[in-house]
Image 1 (cartoon, rainbow, N blue to C red):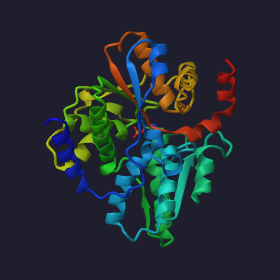
Image 2: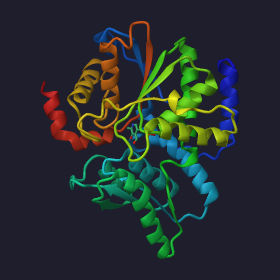
Image 3: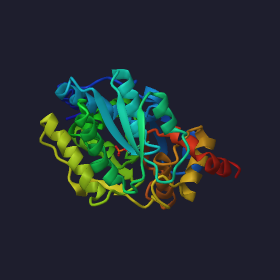
Image 4: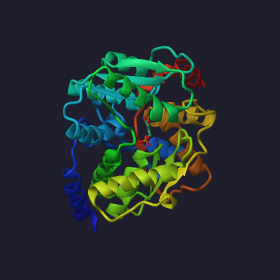
Length: 345
Ligand SMILES: Cc1ncc(COP(=O)(O)O)c(C=O)c1O
């Protein structure tokens, strides 16, 4: 189904799903002339999802529209929300922002194994009025799967109607199906035919794009660059699962298979939330070519992968790349010394 017809079919299906508008959409699509020239390969455009608006924005703003839309439809009487992740979690900061907009209290459980100072995202969490609880649990999977449930149970035992905002809730990937439709329209308006979509991805963002790409019949391949791995599951499996839960909600026949998912773990470097020489070089290069600021945890590692793909000849002058900037910039302020040192070069 060509462009406009496919888009309106998908928009009709999405419109049947509960959604709370948090994001300022559409986000801009920007060409990066100096980065493209510096790399000497493909034309590189950036989808500015760092500019979704709500309290410094990012991809999670889109996700929360659908996740909280469904949660509040099912539980309109919720009295307190619970979520969490790592101390510099963008998801948690965006959840705190959404909770503030909804006027619902929120408890955040944040992994803080190194007793980091209050800076960046976690500073914003306090500012937005969240109750912050730190955990020393080193395994993120356990934080997300077990500790959040424990806090929900504790709040319920106190008689409060508590609900977890689940970062893998079935509607989550609808957000990037919607984004794919938005991007498709922007590309058509400019006569752009991307051959590759490139992003930082640890699950649902790529899921939505994969499903969106199928529904829209995209020619472009999608490459996700993982900032971390999850214990006990491969990212292509998780990505396909989340895509297919969204497909079931939309009642479409298309499905995403793990083998469809190109998700790479070769840029994790020293570990999650630990910059690599390559990710720091990427931050410096995009800032000094097109004044594009990347975050130290996600988008800089994705860009490091893109730069590497150009240098290896995987992406050439025949390609048109859309890099999805998924946000995360507040975390940069928790990396002051590293960024200062990298900037002196
Ligand atoms: C800035 C940023 N980019 C990308 C991602 C990956 O998103 P997802 O988990 O939906 O793949 C995250 C997730 O925390 C993020 O904060």
